[in-house]
Image 1 (spheres, rainbow, N blue to C red):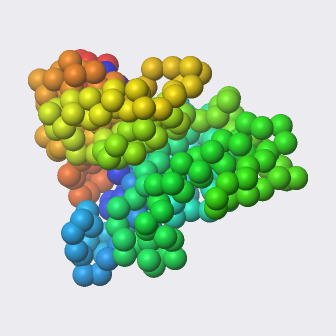
Image 2 (image 1 turned 45 degrees about the vertical axis):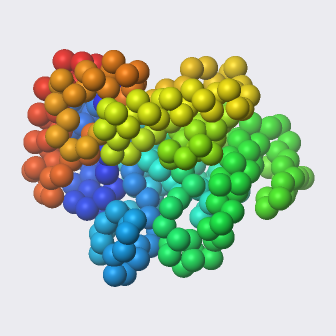
Length: 283
């Protein structure tokens, strides 16, 4: 079992001094990865299924990870997740490659299709076609990263006769991790992903997700180069060693812990205690 830390760009960690301190503490405690959240805008007033209120501070994931690349040495830097259909995939490919270069090959590209219709409306992105565009954007991004003469001609993205450097350090490209629990998300994970990511999933939910991923494997062709799908989960807060062992028995490979701390000192204390009670015992 490996352990990540969720929310390195949120709340107290939207302060660069706090995020740098927490990131270094997590690396020292043995965490293998730092994970960002993303919402460009949030509904005001808050309405379901919005996860947090409109005043919650969320730094842009890639700006945050680029900053933390210079504050850490070895820990992986993960987007958990980027809402892909809200982005321009050609611009995003450049931004992601830049973070991978600045971090010397530590980026993990976590994506999801999104679920907040007011956010899509504010950005001017079509909510109804988000799943199909998520798939096509992944194909366009990987073309820009891997093809000698990048070209893609799809329903919503088309380019050729262009190039974009630098390429990512990781070859053929940074690992893609797909979030979501709908059948389409499971198929997307099997078709494009090195891994799947589930947020606030109990052991029972994680087991159901693994069943959904197994069904999806029979519905799409998984490229052999991707290898076996890695499964990362953010458990509900309060995960102890016994609960972590349950996730491991299910087949979960990484727990991305969510702290409820609201100050720098509380966050560092959470990281250090998790390092002692979970990371060093179970990793």
